[in-house]
Length: 92
Image 1 (cartoon, rainbow, N blue to C red):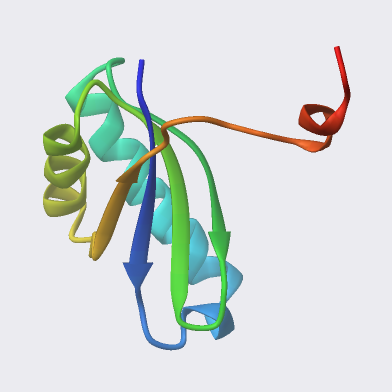
Image 2: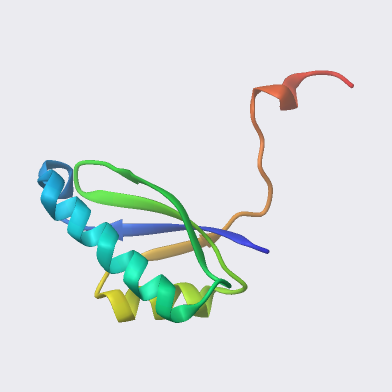
């Protein structure tokens, strides 16, 4: 199933309290339970003014629906085409 990176612009999110982030995570999980197993949240990275989320879903539309239902921004959604890591540099 395709993997997506979602960029969420959220001013000051890096300074959000643990309780605020817990609440956002709970909202996301609640929406995911309703939407079913086709869409999965893998992990997210919080920076100063953005959250970068990694999701697995059949299509971009389902990512947008999750964002809308949860009240989250989804400023940019990018489908992951390929993955590389340090082992990519190794010669077979």
